[in-house]
Image (tube, rainbow, N blue to C red; front, side):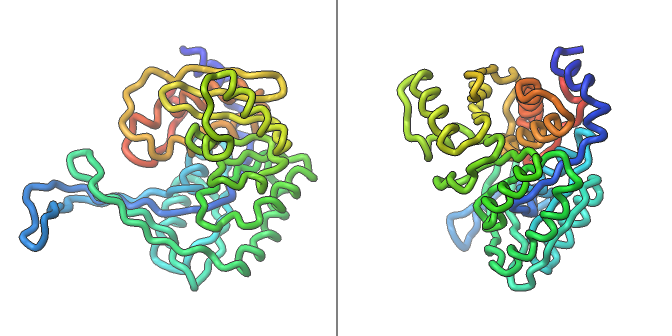
Length: 315
């Protein structure tokens, strides 16, 4: 039994009793698998002959399904369109033991990311998306306030699609109740995340906010400055093949990436914040949660597309 699996096993009963609320941008990931054997006579483009299709929850939906796969209770609060893709999302998430509270907006379409894949290579991605209306987002706040009294941790998954227009208010409400908030950030304006307990940017996202750095010392100085400016307890920076680094008031902790074959990094950030939220909801220290999340990320990058990790898959 590995050290990481032993640590997860120690928290397993508490994980089963934990309840995590996921709020954010949800989407439907569609995959069309086929082969390319010729070039179109109509234009110099490949012709993909589709043999099979798959659908999976993406965005905040992928975060929620990862939490459920680890054994915790997951509730997902988001906005979708009143359409076939929204119906598919509800069906898929129900099948993965995620409780959904979707507010439907007939004026928008559910965000869909369609990927065409041939011989295990992505040929094309087509996105269908519209931002939700301000009015519907406002009506979501009452449901959010009610759910705060029922959960241990809030995970906010920001994909920049408009589903978290009121994130500052949501963070303030959670902190007022003493509920921890974890945020997967997006974009350059991080002032809206002020007061969250933990942010989980990757290196590229962090660079957008603090600029470039020349060495680890400058990175630590800039990251700690940002953490202080935003009044957040910690920054957990995911660094691909370099592993993860945690910046907190206690200092800096880095761990190497797990030595596994990388197949597809899409959705790895979802798995990281899902694992963190699950373990923190169970009462685990942040550093222990980080180590388990690091191994979970190592597992999920070996799978195609958005995927989940089960405790039995830890090496």
